[in-house]
Image: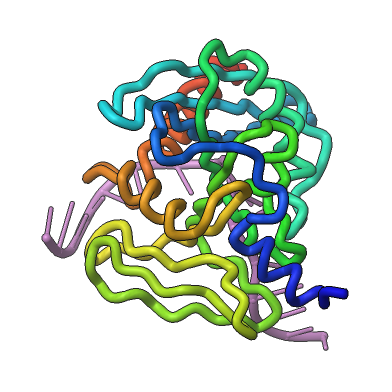
Amino acid sequence: METFKEEQKKWQSQIVLTPNFDLTEIKIVAGVDLAYWSEEGADFGVCSIILINYVTKEVIESVSVADRITVPYHPGYLAFRELPLILKAAVCLKHQPDIYMFDGNGFLHPLNMGIATHASFYLNKPTIGVAKTFFNLKGIEFVMPANKIGGYTLIEADGLVYGASLRTRENVKPVFVSCGNWIDLETALAITMALVTKDSRLPMTTRLADLETHKQRKLLKNTP
DNA sequence: GCGACAG
DNA sequence: ATCTTGTCGC
């Protein structure tokens, strides 16, 4: 009988439930993000999903869906708040992305089930989590990566790799990359780096989705 | 009681 | 996440 630790080590590279996803020829990458506002005491949110041509870096498609948000935010439970709207937006896509990138963590999570991992089981696609700030799990610290583009340090404890602190730009704070599902960390890091431009420390998928949610909110919010 | 805490 | 102007720096 395998110990939990042994199973966890398999999950960290997501090899247990791997369907036949081929990440050697990625064509479309999706970026997902949400923005919030409130009206008359009620909370609303808009989710934008941007599809990027992985080769040319051109925008292929953009969808945005807004709705009321009823679940509050609690650290560790982000998916329960954001996933409903994300799934509503995902079904509106005309193109099928080969992989989704999220604003938040995947395996780097108290239950190894951050929003990127959680979402994968509904989207049935490989996923990557890219967080802007470190989610401190039970005392696990991260080592600051070298100040060089592409430099990274693994976030690990007990021989278990939770993710990586990645320097996407020089002289800029690192981002935190972790496997969502059906992908290994090295591939997740490579894809993330391939989508970073001079505009942001975040990959353009996440960055463009973020900009779009702000634009949508401006259009949707009532400001008499 | 105090500090930590993805978005 | 969000409320928010100017401002220091590459």
